[in-house]
Length: 219
Image (cartoon, rainbow, N blue to C red; front, side, top):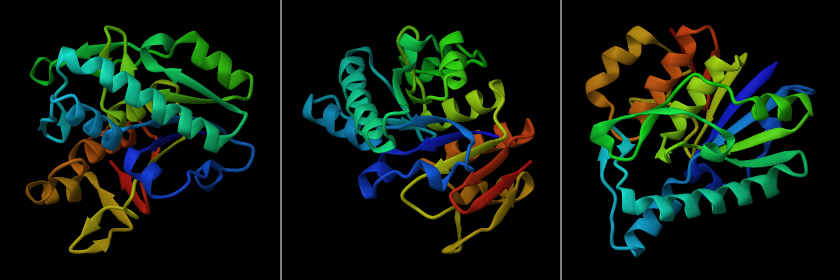
C-alpha cells in the first residue's frame, strides 16, 4: 500500500521522525512536510511577520525567498532522518501545479497532477520528500498538498503527523470523526486544525484511509 505522510514542522521540532511508524512493512511512501516554525521565525527576522486566514498562511511575494530557504532546511533535515532512500524535492522544481488563491497572496491550492518524476522515484523504491511549493512559485499549505497528492496518486492511506496525538474533543483524543461530527465541531475549531480536517475530509471522500494522529477521519 502507498502511504502519504504529512509531517508538520512542529512535529519535526518535537521529536525525530520515524517513517516506519506510519508505513506498513514493504509499503511505499511519499512524505510532504511543512516548516511552519522555521518560516515564521525567518519572516519575523526579515521584518515581514506572519498573517493567517482560516489557518492558512498569507504569502507576500517578498517572503518567498525566506520561505524557500526554510523549506530547504526542513527538507534536508527530514531526509537525513529518513535515510538514504529519501529523495528531497522542492515541489515547484518537481513540477507541482497550483491554482492561486488571491486572498492568500502568492499561495495556491494544489492541482491533482502527478509529475512523472514522482512516479519514477516511487518505481525506483525511493521515498520522495516534498516541500509544498508549486510552480510560480506559489506557497501551498502542506495539509492541502498531502491530501490532493494522496487522491491523485492514488494512495491507500494518508497520515497527518503533528506535535499532538490526534484531534482533541473536550480535551480527549477522538478515536474517530465523521464528516457530520466535524461539521458540528466547526465553531469550536480554529488555527491549523481547520485546514488539516478540511484536507482529511477531501481525501476521505475519495476513498483514502485517513488518520490525523490517532484520530481516524471518515467521510
